[in-house]
Image (cartoon, rainbow, N blue to C red):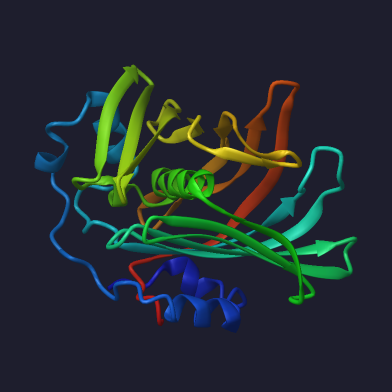
Length: 272
């Protein structure tokens, strides 16, 4: 198990206790299934554009990532005509068992706190939000949320932990010289996306149609993308500095989230 340089440096970005309790209680795997390093042999059967991406992201020569924990700050809005709200978010993702637990705190009108959880566990996705931790303001579940949360797990892996993508659940297909399609299968469900690369082989955008926008009339399948703001180097491998979340709706694009990545740590057990 390794300790992230950013985790040591960002002493002021410790996870909230409620987040840690929730993660510890989720019953997720506490360690990797293998500690073997990724080699060029693991990339041999992939489309060249996908292999270029994995090399550029520093996957070769390191063990496969089996978990990640990330801390974001930024802003978020629930509807295109609403004001932006300050956001602080923590998440824990597992690849040993495909799972994603994302906790976001918003400040409505900058004074009323609202907490929301987006989760994917055992093939089930759910969105749940409460104002003042008392009043439910969002509660969604069902097949649309199962699909949406699974493809969001895939997005996280592509942008933050590409070594999670080497395994039997994942399939790859070349799209052109600078993009590829990647799919993940879990609990009998398959979702996919197209990943667009920059000149260095790092992702500049992730686009999928396997996600449902939570609109006033109910969930609606719509193209969704997460353009990347930029990249830096941490511990010898690229790390994104931040990005955005955008719905591409029939009337117009709806940019609803903008985030800066403050901290990213790998291979931590859920209870740590």
